[in-house]
Length: 188
Image (tube, rainbow, N blue to C red; front, top):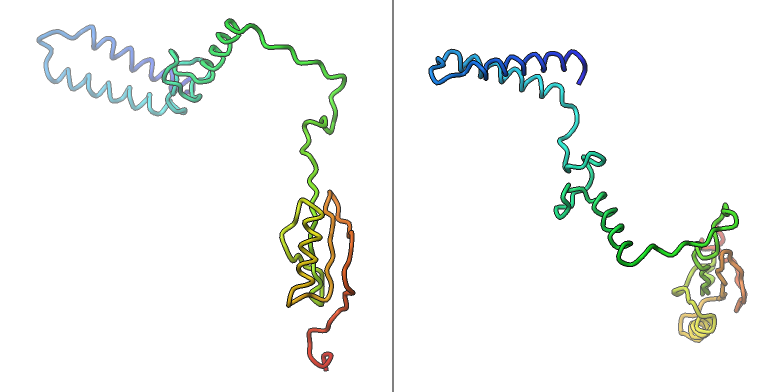
């Protein structure tokens, strides 16, 4: 609310106060309509001056914060802080964390996920290598799968097993991949 709006609202409220002091049991209806008009003007000035939403909590620090109906001030953030303080009184202070020698730009080992390794069975389709089964976590299981594929009725020209571990490495190739032209008669 700017200074001009604040001044106008103060003037309208002082006028309403004077109306309130002058009210008696024999106040005429014309005077009451005048009070009603002044009340409307004061409410309009107040509506123009308010720019933010009504506070959801009774907390001065977090007026529009999340609500906790069990908290005396309805503020979830302050109530969480108070609950932690009560727990600390009952359970004692939390154990101190060991100080790090120097913060690492890349984090510590426990912060990084463990690397995943998989074995990818692939077949040669005449043009390129393509995945022919679900990636396996066990190398022996992947090799058994490829052996079964090679013995099957619709075996491919070649198979290979690729080790995926942050990079790809071809471990073993069965058969000889030969590029096959997909156009009949050699694109004549």
